[in-house]
Length: 503
Image (cartoon, rainbow, N blue to C red; front, side, top):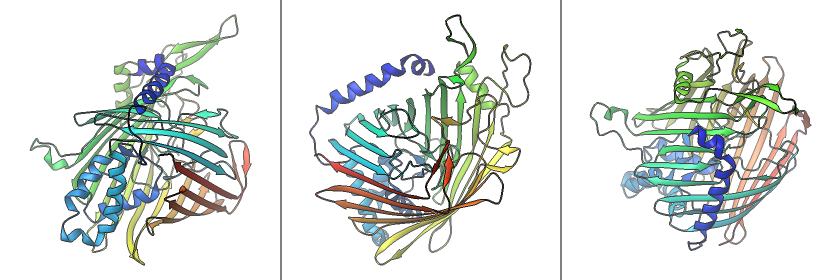
């Protein structure tokens, strides 16, 4: 798997673009959102899904994105005609309609224009545009056993020196109850809304291959049936930004179970693995590289914390260094309290270690979420506290093995806020009607364990027009200018995304 990504990176990109372009010319075009799963770009859809899960309508795990449509559609169809589901009928119909469109055996074409006053520095679930200006062309389709999305984005960015991106492009195959894919797919692991300390949409998605379950049925075995619906996700991708370590790999594994209708638990791990060290320069001025371990045994050693120092570290190997890689691991859960109006408590605890089975550097995320009905619409809210450091010597994303840390193209792969922070956030979302959706977020951040605090308010509005497409507006105001990546960003920002469907 890893060798394929090392040797075939460019070939793989060309291959899935060519196959996707070829196959999509063979299907009929209609105005549909054709994808087998839910991505990380729609906060209102996620809010509706969580509302239905809170009331016991959706029973499959919902904390790992991309989230397959198969479970969501099946769970809603089982409940939609029951008398007890009628108070939530409008929300059920809304999600079901989107899901049916997404999985219909047809193709979809669209263009997107994104304009921002300045770069999107802090990305959370639902964010789309990254650069100041983006123009994207997208074509996607679903058949019985395959799905693909070819998405080409041209951008003008002060932080990214690439003018063209293929973010979101993939080819996926469905065999039995498994989905395998190759592409650049954004992921979001965990119940948090504002950020995820292990894997979020903050950094661009690297090219990788992945496998996950399609349906989340319980085990047939009586001894394992108590685990309830379960899901498994695994992937390996190549980080091609090539600073100190060339062609390092990002790997991840997630197992999610739901032993009770009210409780979802996930065990997750991700790791930086392999790559090549710069060990010198030849007579022509070119770097000389030495390969790090990338065998299956080294991957197992990484996940269980076995240390390997290699021969070229001059015997200076301490307890926090291992050429096997750098690992983040832990668990998260989402528990619905037994109240008349559902109230969820969610919690995540992850740690980082190169040489220990149980990571020592532990950080946490704690949140509450619920919903209420007001003026005929459901409103989903969350209150969240998150951190990547709880003391000077207990900080996530610092690694002796990988000097850049847990980053890809200068962006954290985990938390959107980066190292040494504490964040409190509040958010609320509602789909008022089919055309209008609104959102509000309040965020307070504390950096570097000092008393300096940074506050931000964000207003969101999505308008869906039958004739002119989809409009997403976002207005941000911060208490102070932000200094990041060597630049000072203003305390005001306006982001507009427009999507127009071509068929």
